Length: 98
Image 1 (tube, rainbow, N blue to C red):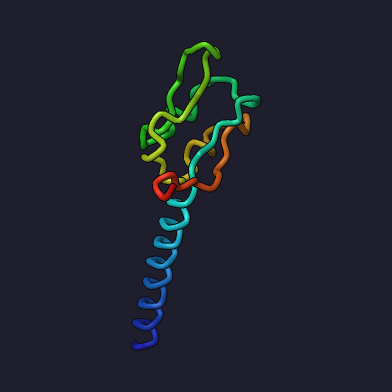
Image 2 (cartoon, one colour):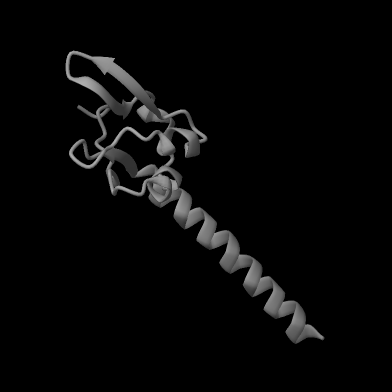
């Protein structure tokens, strides 16, 4: 019986540790739009739950850009939604320390 409890505790610790590792890893990453691959299909906008991306019309034309980069958790949901490989996770640059 104690082996079952020990196994459950170990499993619980592994799950919690994995979640903390993913959360810490995600803070160091941010989504980046590869303009040449983007077709402006908006599937990434629909998938992002953190309101990071936006469709913008300006002098460069219509394109997807980061509207709220501080909200990006690096979860990769928008990347999995993009069928055109127009998004990638890159290392977040810390502008506060400059």
